[in-house]
Image: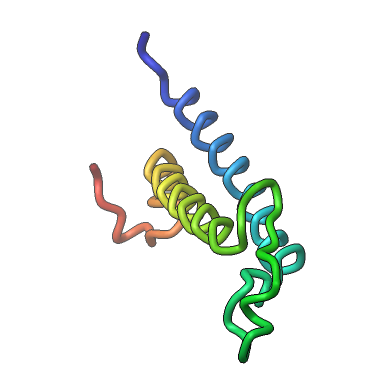
Length: 103
């Protein structure tokens, strides 16, 4: 089954949108739900070791940070593919008339 240009654009847009939503969600979790110091360490003396490790949906702040990073990489790649799929529009919109190059 061959996927046409419009289908590629739709798939790319959906993946970009979903990854952006997840980036916003995981950013809120990292910033507000599991704030700095929620990992149980990093504090002075014995109190740091005595604090429990906080988790949200079964993952610690550090694990959420890893997921946030890799989803951001997916988002960057998706946006690059999106720009590639719309390259004709980018070229026409941003290159001056005298400098347009045929490809």
